[in-house]
Amino acid sequence: MTTLKSGDKAAATTLVVGISSKKDSKGVATLVVETSGSKALSKLNEKQLLDALKKIGATGSADEVKRLPIGAGTTYTMIVTSGLGATQKRYEHEKLRRAAGAASRELGDIVSADFSLPHDDLATLAAIAEGVGLGAYNFIDFRGTSKAGQKKPLKDATLLTSLPVNAESKAALKRAEIISKNVHLTRDFINTPPSHLTPVTFSERMKKIASGLGLKVEILNESQLKAKGYGGITAVGQGSANPPRLLHISYSPARPKKRFAFVGKGITFDSGGLALKPAAGMEAMKSDMSGAAAVVAALFAIAELKLPVAVDAWAPLAENMVSDTATRPSDIITMYGGKTVEVLNPDAEGRLVLADAIVRATEVGKKAGGLDGLVNVATLTGAQVVALGTRTSAVMTNNEEFRKDLLAAADSSGELFWPMPLPEELRPSFDSPVADIANIGDRMGGMLVAGLFLKEFVEPEIPWCHLDIAGPAFNERAAHGYTPVGGTGVSVRTLLTLVEEAL
Image (cartoon, rainbow, N blue to C red):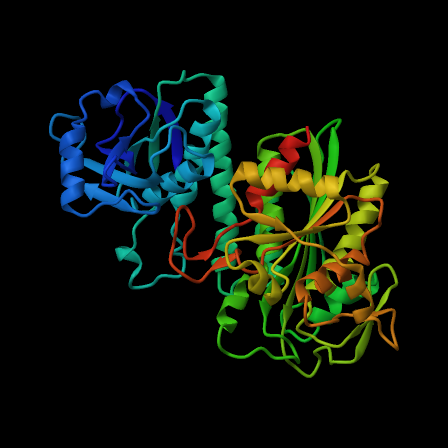
């Protein structure tokens, strides 16, 4: 985790500034240096910098990072520029967050750096700080002979600012550090190979962290799950040598102002079961526990920030494998709460484990006085990727006001979510002639059908949002902004901000 601080004095020998591009009256593009205006930059020779950037073909476009060893006349020996796109009077938080992250991501061989990106208030400075922390990530746990050649993430960063360094600004930077740490935790879990991250090891690793934060932890093993009637989790996990678990972590501050439940899909590897997936792309199925990691990490961040809101995080964990004990197409299972489901497709397994946990989360929430909101997070359907691509997640709901709150939180945090419907005309498509419902329905609108299935297990009076993060959870393309290749940690920031803005 990168240590963040702010001030108006140079603290390192590497300086990061912004670069934008604007067109003159003749339509010729020119570069503009964008900085915080800190006193530490008074000797920066902008003309020299712009001339050098022009010679190396810099454009100032987003994600463009350039290094220039031209610190003559300043305290810096290296100047790094990060593109901001078209010149603006005031830049959006997310644009600055991404620019800071793109630079931070490229500074793995630098121990410390100063960041001078344009801002005029604390909220903007905080967004820059988040970008710096989020970009400073590299997963090297399983490197062997190549480990020594890997870049370590940026260790220290100073945000140059003319704003006062006070308790409020220090708290904002501390929050950015906590966010980065827990997003990194989510990424680490996603990137860990499934031979090392099983339902058991996931639970034990999270329990260790939770215990260090003073949180209450409950883990149900396979025998307890079967005895207590968790038919969904049991059915999905019964084909694997690695048995299923239900992880429940509680944060209960004194006199909480609100109470939420977060439920995350925790399929530590998804082979498709007896609906075996094709080999191409199956390696990415180690990311099918992204939702579970995200909801737990979000709870850790909430606890570290000591927010006066009670939150229960639920991670139903299973490995969906092929064996002589695996659930067969046409098997009928009894879910927690008594509803029966005909399993027509064993590869539509995420909704089964989620449904069990949703019902249990509702029970616990009602006993504690009621839930102000329930959110489930899941890499649930390939249809989500078809509909919204790899950077935008979907939100479905039974309560429009709650969805507005969640979308506002996503916008504040910089994560991309888009509202999707739950059309009632699709509901009959998963009627079953032999059970209460089937686990699949119409193929067209598959993302929405999955959401409607989950809705069957949500009590109507509880505000609920279903987040399908199938595409954005795992980046299989090039790194961009503060997003690395592999696990992204999407939804951690949104969940945290949702809780903060509920106060």
